[in-house]
Length: 159
Image (cartoon, rainbow, N blue to C red; front, side):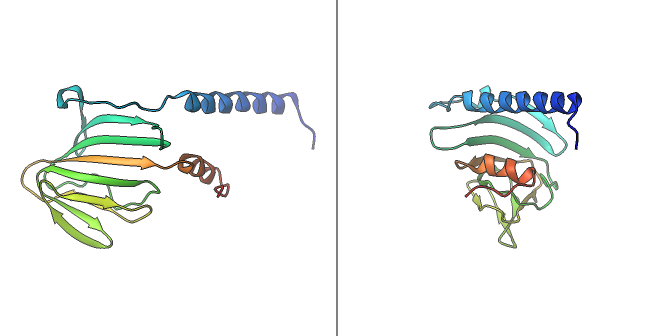
Protein backbone atom coordinates (compact mmCIF):
# COMPACT_ATOMS: atom_id res chain seq x y z
CA UNK A 1 0.00 0.00 0.00
CA UNK A 2 1.33 3.42 -0.95
CA UNK A 3 0.98 6.34 1.49
CA UNK A 4 0.13 9.56 -0.31
CA UNK A 5 0.69 13.16 0.67
CA UNK A 6 -3.10 13.43 1.14
CA UNK A 7 -3.01 10.49 3.61
CA UNK A 8 -0.26 12.20 5.60
CA UNK A 9 -2.16 15.51 5.62
CA UNK A 10 -5.38 13.86 6.88
CA UNK A 11 -3.43 11.97 9.55
CA UNK A 12 -1.65 15.17 10.65
CA UNK A 13 -4.86 17.21 10.88
CA UNK A 14 -6.55 14.40 12.83
CA UNK A 15 -3.63 14.15 15.26
CA UNK A 16 -3.56 17.91 15.87
CA UNK A 17 -7.35 18.04 16.41
CA UNK A 18 -7.20 15.09 18.84
CA UNK A 19 -4.37 16.64 20.84
CA UNK A 20 -6.21 19.97 20.98
CA UNK A 21 -9.33 18.28 22.36
CA UNK A 22 -7.36 16.27 24.90
CA UNK A 23 -5.43 19.30 26.12
CA UNK A 24 -8.64 21.34 26.38
CA UNK A 25 -10.19 18.63 28.56
CA UNK A 26 -7.03 18.34 30.66
CA UNK A 27 -6.89 22.13 30.99
CA UNK A 28 -10.46 22.32 32.34
CA UNK A 29 -9.99 23.10 36.02
CA UNK A 30 -11.79 21.10 38.67
CA UNK A 31 -15.00 22.74 39.84
CA UNK A 32 -14.56 24.57 43.12
CA UNK A 33 -17.14 24.85 45.89
CA UNK A 34 -20.09 26.96 44.81
CA UNK A 35 -23.42 28.26 46.13
CA UNK A 36 -26.02 29.06 43.47
CA UNK A 37 -29.45 30.71 43.60
CA UNK A 38 -32.56 29.56 41.72
CA UNK A 39 -32.59 32.90 39.90
CA UNK A 40 -29.12 32.26 38.48
CA UNK A 41 -30.35 29.37 36.29
CA UNK A 42 -31.62 30.25 32.84
CA UNK A 43 -34.77 28.34 31.92
CA UNK A 44 -34.60 26.97 28.38
CA UNK A 45 -37.75 25.56 26.74
CA UNK A 46 -37.63 21.94 25.52
CA UNK A 47 -40.18 19.84 23.62
CA UNK A 48 -41.33 18.32 26.95
CA UNK A 49 -41.15 21.37 29.25
CA UNK A 50 -37.91 23.14 30.14
CA UNK A 51 -34.42 22.68 31.54
CA UNK A 52 -32.17 24.79 33.76
CA UNK A 53 -28.47 23.88 33.49
CA UNK A 54 -26.73 24.02 36.87
CA UNK A 55 -23.17 22.82 36.15
CA UNK A 56 -21.16 20.33 34.12
CA UNK A 57 -17.47 20.10 34.99
CA UNK A 58 -14.76 17.87 36.40
CA UNK A 59 -14.27 17.87 40.17
CA UNK A 60 -11.32 16.87 42.33
CA UNK A 61 -12.60 13.25 42.42
CA UNK A 62 -14.79 12.90 39.27
CA UNK A 63 -14.11 13.19 35.57
CA UNK A 64 -17.43 15.03 35.34
CA UNK A 65 -20.28 16.12 37.61
CA UNK A 66 -23.42 17.33 35.84
CA UNK A 67 -26.61 18.77 37.28
CA UNK A 68 -29.73 20.21 35.73
CA UNK A 69 -33.31 20.91 36.72
CA UNK A 70 -36.10 19.63 34.50
CA UNK A 71 -39.70 20.86 34.31
CA UNK A 72 -41.75 18.11 32.68
CA UNK A 73 -45.22 18.98 31.36
CA UNK A 74 -48.23 16.81 32.39
CA UNK A 75 -48.55 13.49 30.59
CA UNK A 76 -45.08 13.65 29.01
CA UNK A 77 -41.90 11.58 29.34
CA UNK A 78 -38.49 13.19 29.23
CA UNK A 79 -37.27 10.34 26.97
CA UNK A 80 -37.91 6.71 26.08
CA UNK A 81 -36.58 4.06 28.48
CA UNK A 82 -32.81 3.94 28.08
CA UNK A 83 -29.58 3.07 29.89
CA UNK A 84 -26.14 4.68 30.20
CA UNK A 85 -22.94 3.99 32.14
CA UNK A 86 -23.25 7.07 34.39
CA UNK A 87 -25.19 6.82 37.62
CA UNK A 88 -27.70 9.50 38.55
CA UNK A 89 -29.84 10.74 41.38
CA UNK A 90 -33.16 12.50 40.78
CA UNK A 91 -34.94 14.48 43.52
CA UNK A 92 -38.57 15.46 42.92
CA UNK A 93 -39.29 19.11 43.81
CA UNK A 94 -42.94 19.29 42.75
CA UNK A 95 -45.54 17.30 40.86
CA UNK A 96 -46.05 13.55 40.50
CA UNK A 97 -43.86 11.32 38.36
CA UNK A 98 -43.74 7.66 37.48
CA UNK A 99 -40.25 6.23 37.33
CA UNK A 100 -39.16 2.98 35.72
CA UNK A 101 -36.76 1.40 38.25
CA UNK A 102 -35.59 -2.24 38.18
CA UNK A 103 -38.36 -3.12 35.71
CA UNK A 104 -41.09 -1.66 37.95
CA UNK A 105 -42.99 1.61 37.66
CA UNK A 106 -42.92 3.65 40.90
CA UNK A 107 -45.01 6.78 41.57
CA UNK A 108 -43.26 9.58 43.49
CA UNK A 109 -44.15 13.09 44.60
CA UNK A 110 -42.29 16.01 46.19
CA UNK A 111 -39.28 14.87 48.18
CA UNK A 112 -39.10 11.53 46.36
CA UNK A 113 -35.60 10.34 45.45
CA UNK A 114 -34.61 8.06 42.56
CA UNK A 115 -31.20 6.44 42.16
CA UNK A 116 -30.47 5.07 38.69
CA UNK A 117 -27.61 2.56 38.76
CA UNK A 118 -25.16 2.22 35.90
CA UNK A 119 -26.56 0.58 32.75
CA UNK A 120 -30.02 -0.01 34.27
CA UNK A 121 -33.04 0.60 32.03
CA UNK A 122 -34.89 3.68 33.30
CA UNK A 123 -37.40 6.38 32.36
CA UNK A 124 -39.49 9.08 33.99
CA UNK A 125 -42.96 10.40 33.10
CA UNK A 126 -45.18 13.11 34.57
CA UNK A 127 -48.40 11.36 35.65
CA UNK A 128 -49.89 14.41 37.39
CA UNK A 129 -52.10 17.28 36.23
CA UNK A 130 -49.46 19.95 36.85
CA UNK A 131 -45.84 20.34 35.71
CA UNK A 132 -43.33 18.17 37.57
CA UNK A 133 -39.97 19.66 38.49
CA UNK A 134 -36.98 17.56 39.51
CA UNK A 135 -33.24 17.97 40.13
CA UNK A 136 -30.83 15.61 38.33
CA UNK A 137 -27.26 14.83 39.45
CA UNK A 138 -25.11 12.63 37.16
CA UNK A 139 -21.43 11.79 37.42
CA UNK A 140 -18.65 10.07 35.56
CA UNK A 141 -16.09 8.37 37.79
CA UNK A 142 -12.42 8.53 36.83
CA UNK A 143 -11.79 6.78 33.53
CA UNK A 144 -15.44 6.48 32.48
CA UNK A 145 -15.29 9.23 29.85
CA UNK A 146 -12.10 7.71 28.39
CA UNK A 147 -13.67 4.24 28.32
CA UNK A 148 -16.85 5.58 26.70
CA UNK A 149 -14.77 7.33 24.04
CA UNK A 150 -12.84 4.13 23.35
CA UNK A 151 -16.06 2.11 23.09
CA UNK A 152 -17.42 4.66 20.62
CA UNK A 153 -14.33 4.01 18.47
CA UNK A 154 -14.82 0.24 18.69
CA UNK A 155 -11.94 -0.25 21.14
CA UNK A 156 -12.04 -2.30 24.32
CA UNK A 157 -12.17 -0.05 27.42
CA UNK A 158 -8.96 -0.15 29.50
CA UNK A 159 -9.32 -1.81 32.86
